[in-house]
Every structure is written in structure tokens, then in C-alpha cells.
Length: 117
Length: 173
Image (cartoon, rainbow over all chains, first blue to last red; front, top):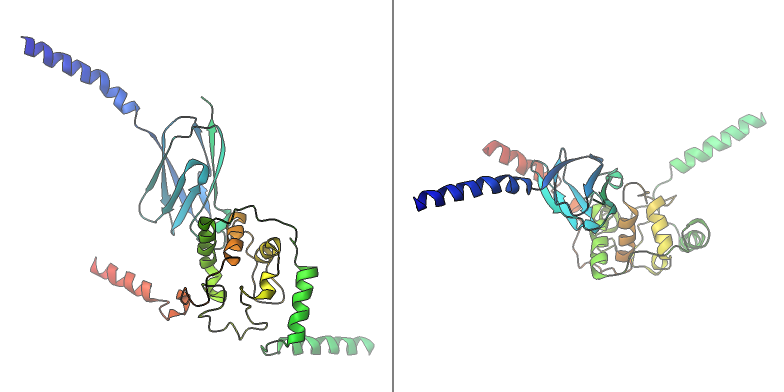
């Protein structure tokens, strides 16, 4: 009987915690890179929120550097490249393509708006 | 009559200029051109480089220089391995030369931004970001010894090698 109660308690506890675990999964924002822009070119995050930035190249190799958020990745065509960020400061953080990709390379800019809660 | 003569002279001058072969300018022409560029035509003289000269930034500048500058200037900025460097008119200058190093940081940035006429130097504004160009200026101030970085890949004779390798890989799959 005691065992049965213990099993029921464990099951109930698991059911209670499961949604909590699901909520803790970071939000994923998909960003496409294509000569010579990022889509979207601007995203918004709440301060302290953990977000996975998932970069996908639609043509050649690109890069993404957002120094103030510690992001510096090479985006190879054909696979998603992820970078997790948890901004601790509100503000606008500029990023740009960090892998030379042709004549419009300098125009590949990106912006992260971090808002206060 | 007068109009025809003027037209004839202009046409002749244009033909003469376009038909000029690529000959290296003499020392007087070279010195005059550098003086004019350094003191009159090249802007940005007072602009300061906002990027600190750390080893990481110099290295970043070297990487940026490798995007396409190496095709004319060589990896070392001293024309190593560039087969036509001495055959352009004017020839490609060594970035380590006293004449180039005499430009201020701001002038080097201006030259990379706007290019130089008349020469083969293209304008890179819009192709490279300001940060990348300033990093490159740091590299130009801290060049390696001539020849120590090897030749640019473009002159290896393997232009289509990666295409062939990719095609071979595709056939296997």
C-alpha cells in the first residue's frame, strides 16, 4: 500500500513538473542569411530571457558577429548554426556579417533590441 | 573650321591616352604623384583609428586584407606572389614602403574607402564595414616580413580544383 502511494506521489510530482521543464526551453528565433541581408534584420528580446538564435544560410557561407552579446559564428549553407544568448542589459546591439560574402558584405547588418521586463 | 580642329585634337588625345601601353612612370612622376596625394587629394588626414592596436585586432585586419586585397597586394602587403604587381601602371606599391607608410591612418582609411584614380585601387566603402577597414589599417601598420606568408591562393593555378572536388563528391553520393 505504501509503495502504491509512493508511486502515485512520484507520478503526480512528475506531472506537476513536466510543464515547468517545457516552459524552460529557450525560445528559438530563426534568422536567414542571404546575400546581402538577414531576415529578419531586427529582433526583440526581453532582458534576462534566454533565446536561441538559429542562423540559416540560403546561399553562401556567411557569419554573424554581435560582440556585445558574445555572438560570433560562421553560418555554413545547409545546416542551422545556433547561438544562445541571455542579455543582461537593455539596449540595441548591432551585429553584422563576419564572413566576407561579396560586394554587399558590409550591408549585411542585424540588430537586437533588448527591452526591460 | 575651328570647331573641327578642336574636335580632332580632343579625339586624338583620347585615342592617344586609351592606346597608351602600361609603362611604369618615371621617378619624378612617381614622387610628384605621391606628394599630390599625400598633401592635396587624399582626405581623412586628421581622422584617428578608433580600434585599439591589439594583437587580436591586427589579426582581424589581416583576415580582412585576405578577403580580396591579397589579389593585388599579396598576403604580406608587399606584393609577394602577385604576378602583375610590377606590370600595372602605376605598379602596385608595397604597403611597407616609406611612401605608403607616410600616409596617416585616416588617409589609409580614406584610400581604402574611396580608391585612387588613376590606378587600379578600387573603392571598398559599402563592401567592407568601417570596423573592418580600420582593422585593416592596423594590419598595414604591422605587416609581417616580406614573403613569410606565402602567395595568394588565386595564383596557385587551382582555380577550379574545389569545383572538381565537389563534383567528384557529388558523383560518389
